[in-house]
Image 1 (spheres, rainbow, N blue to C red):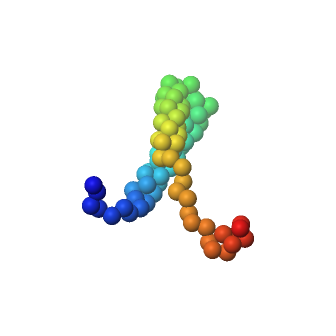
Image 2 (tube, helix red, strand yellow):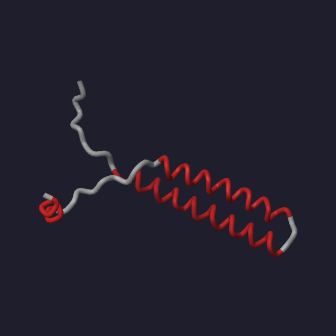
Image 3 (cartoon, rainbow, N blue to C red):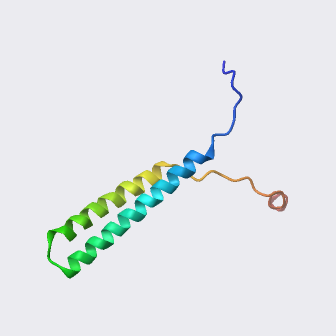
Amino acid sequence: MNALPETAPDPAPLARRVRDTRRFLAGAAVVTVAGITLVVQDETGLGRWLVVFGMIALVVGLHRFGRLGPDPEEPSPPAARDEAD
């Protein structure tokens, strides 16, 4: 038997993980664009590796973002509930 009252989970950790994942995705996109820019301007291997690393990071970031789950449902305002009935 659980003696603790049931409470809603704290939304702060989820918001922090969403923010961190979005920053990770933004960084991966910047690295990918920088790599593409280097490949277009110069024939060095650095640009190719940046593109590969950036694309892998984008896939990892999208996976992390998807694993966070669906957005929490917000309660609808009373006026919207009355109109729906």
